[in-house]
Image (cartoon, rainbow, N blue to C red; front, side, top):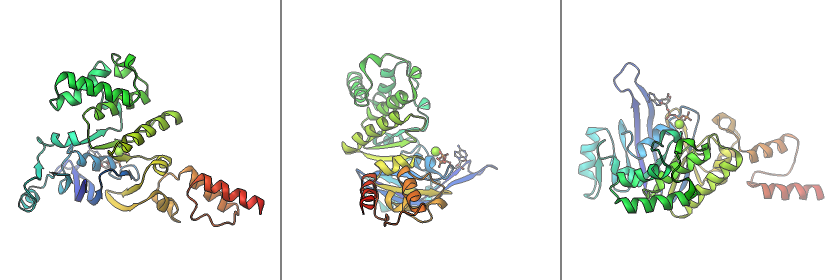
Length: 300
Ligand SMILES: Nc1ncnc2c1ncn2[C@@H]1O[C@H](COP(=O)(O)OP(=O)(O)OP(=O)(O)O)[C@@H](O)[C@H]1O
Ligand SMILES: [Mg+2]
């Protein structure tokens, strides 16, 4: 098990008049090498939850364990865990949580928030330098990362803020890859991109996954979920509603109750049913199979 989320709650503005419990006792597990998505209505707690995975915020109660690191803001629980866990396990406080960020890289919902240096290369080098990698090696890792996301050398001295949305995302991803994390979390990586840009970013993420990294995607784009993801965690109102797969989820009779976008494929399948197509489509989960069955029906 690579990530274990154990009964995690998180309250923003604790003990203030405007305190708000965004996570209400979430437990889930993610294995090494999985490609998963966190989905759910706006405000359901997705971005809050992923920030507990790399220690940007500490759970108010419960804990997150990533390999041999644990994060929790619950002092009593910390003492219990110290007694219970083996010696290799480190319980990180806010100051030490940066150790987790080397292992768990996160690309934010708005890449603009992540970019800050005046050249692309300097921007990407910040990560490895921050983790005390020696300058020449940091440069080498950064150049490799930029090349791997398809940013040409002629761009390296350009200002990252002058880039297009898709290019900014690539640079933000390179900035994370340069620190060689095992786990990559991407919050809405395709938001605002055109269909080609979306495909390019998703294929890039797929390649990174093939190299053995664990991928956690937060997205409202259910076509992306259907095409790329193996497992889905559905959040609702700060709770885990269910752990499922794309085909199981989108074949549900009550899928409209989830307030999720329906993938194009399932919209089409539902239209066929609505307009009286009689063959059983319940086991058909790909366009190719659907086209075959429509052609068969025409020839019958
Ligand atoms: N800094 C904050 N202070 C107070 N409340 C917050 C803060 N950030 C988020 N919240 C609240 O916590 C809840 C969960 O927010 P979160 O950003 O995790 O949702 P989300 O599922 O990522 O939504 P979206 O799909 O819109 O990105 C929301 O009700 C939000 O208003
Ligand atoms: Mg969010």
